[in-house]
Length: 169
Image 1 (cartoon, helix red, strand yellow):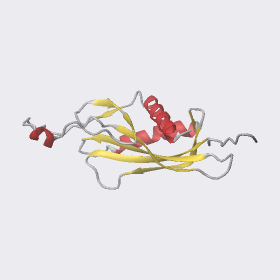
Image 2: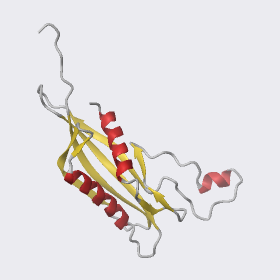
Image 3: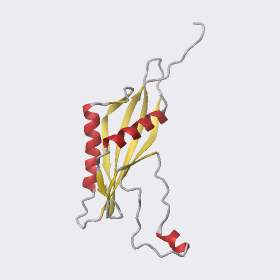
Image 4: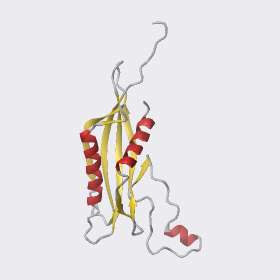
């Protein structure tokens, strides 16, 4: 099992898990959660780019990537030993938007974290081959945010090792 297979499976699992989830977006609509692998896509336009093109600047920049989860592969461990499972570490970066004066956007981040925790605490196996290794660590941003809120979850996975085959033994 390669790390990419794990990442692809986790992206698909999260898309399914959050298929009914909607959250506030910068353009004022409620959007489904985007799920990206490894990096956020580059934004198409910003206020500066629009002004450079001679177009009127937007009143407020909008970012179609929000809300999102970005599934990042961060590290792995391949232990010695024929039957040892590999460990692959992932970090789920969560970004939400909330423009209320009460600054309660962290609640959306926590709801996302809670749904992921609930899914894997009940059944810590994904795709019949990846086993979640506890503990799960989660974080919220430490500064006092306004409009954009972020959090993260660390998930470590046990992955079946590829076994060496030695011909003629």
